[in-house]
Image 1 (tube, rainbow over the protein chains, first blue to last red):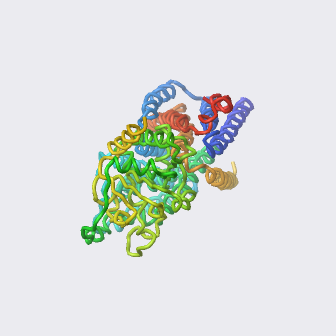
Image 2 (cartoon, each protein chain N blue to C red; image 1 turned 90 degrees about the vertical axis):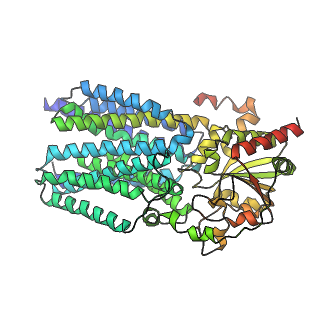
Length: 464
Length: 112
């Protein structure tokens, strides 16, 4: 009898081992677009093996498991079919779901195991549910802001950091108490509640432009809480998957913060939007040069090398398919067109690449900032569509600017810069952009989609 | 049932897996950071295995209810995560096969 259970356990563990290897391979194959789809296959296979192995456990009744799996699939399919522009909020929502799973399992384990729980287990369990809890509400808040159900503007109030700090300390005090006295079970719900409240308050002061960093950070928290759950359940598979997810979130957060020249603490506690109101107000009306679609088309068709700089504004205007038509029209005329992708363009890491790939722009035309920045001086036209702060030369030169030190795309070094923009209003960060007053800059006022559309019409009309 | 050696084992696994994760993910092309995040999201939902055991064992009503919700949440992440990652990766096309359709097209569509 025990021998049989033992051998089933070994089979389960071996299946988990294979699943772990498949998960690592899955991420490894993501290194290049040519192998990435194998990665999905490996991930799916690993998942099937792991779930199948779990179902082999003794003494299981399958009825409710089956219902839950079907229900989850019914919810999951539409979440997999959202529009590409909605991917950031979908991702935030799925961070919330993942963290919800971890928090619920952690809570259930708490009530099953206490008071006979080792101190270490209780400490890890507290970490699991605190991280999980704050990720649930934090991610829901982020999803709400991205979906524009909640205001995108950062909300700040006096003593904000103090309130957050006190809450965090409160949760930690409860956690320590539970570690020392696991029998005081009535404290546990308060720890969860504080974690949930902390998650809400953490995201309230964060604005739209900081979302790439925040989503990455929440990704990391979700991973760490899952790894903590692995410690509690003594599941090596979960520890590995959580560590992989956690390091992914951490790496992406580091890349995003670097791309904004800000530290984690600054992103979380700094509320970007409020500081620079004075800077924008002090500007007087300086002369800018503007151009019509006809003029823009003429300049573009005379160029040899064009670099398009897309930003979140392009996604908002749904202009990516028109941009693709422009790419086609110019390429047909022998113009070399490439796209310069700033790491924080869009609302999550890599967002711009996905939107442009959806519009059928080949991925080898999408170039990272570090790789393309040296090419701007040899570029005839830099066309900025819906991007602002990532092209602001003040980040290089003006030490008083709030974005000083942030790495930018050096569009101002190209022979001609054209900026499609609705008006002279400053961008999300509310910072005036000196680029617009340069002699080699032309403003193309209008809606990105409509303006690119008229350029394309000019190009095809003149040369059909 | 030596709990401190179990703990040490778990720590070894965590640290080494974190190290592998760091090395592997560092090499992921920035082009694919969005699909990377949706993929890790799906993989992270492997937490479903803990929830499945809770539901299957019926140790208490609370544990079963919590486990049930957890399985639903994690499964929707697994399914949704894989579906959207696949959709995104399908969109990434190189310009090279288009320029020489005869020579290169044989290797790519196999993946489709």
